[in-house]
Length: 157
Ligand code: IDP
Ligand code: MG
Image (tube, rainbow, N blue to C red; front, top):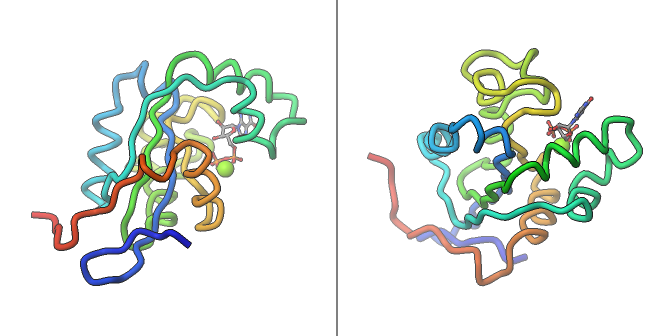
C-alpha cells in the first residue's frame, strides 16, 4: 500500500475529508481547517471541485435508496466543495472525533458539527470512517501525483 512515509520511516495514517457547501456558505472553512491543523494533522492534498449527482451516488452509495437521497444530492451539489487528504497519527479516528456525530443537534459543543452544523443533512464536513474507507475515498478524489508527503521532521510550535 502506498501509505505516506514520515521522516522516521513510519507509515503515517491518512484520511479523507470533504468540506460541504454549508461550510463554504457559512464562511467557516478557515476555522475548520484551523481545528484540524491544531490537532496535529497535516494537509497533504487539497482541491476545490463541483460534485455531480454521479459522484454523490458513488460517495454516498450506502444512502442511494433512502428517501432523503435526492435532497442530499441537491445540497451536496449546491456549491463547490473542498476535498482534503490529511495525515497524522490516528488521523481517521481523530477527525471523526473532531467532527462529532452526524446530527449537529446531537453533537456536543466544541465539535465541528456541534458548533457549525445545521441539521442531520447540512453538517459541514464529511470524514472517512475507517482506514480502508479512507484509502478508497481519497483515491476517488485525488490522483497519486496530487497527494504530497509531510516533511519529515515537521513539528507543531
Ligand atoms: P457520516 O457523515 O457521519 O459518516 P453517514 O450516515 O455516512 O454519516 O451519512 C452521510 C451523510 O448523509 C451525512 O453526513 C449527511 O449529510 C447525510 N445524511 C445522513 N443521514 C441523513 C438523514 O437522515 N437525512 C438527511 N441526510 C442524511
Ligand atoms: Mg459516513
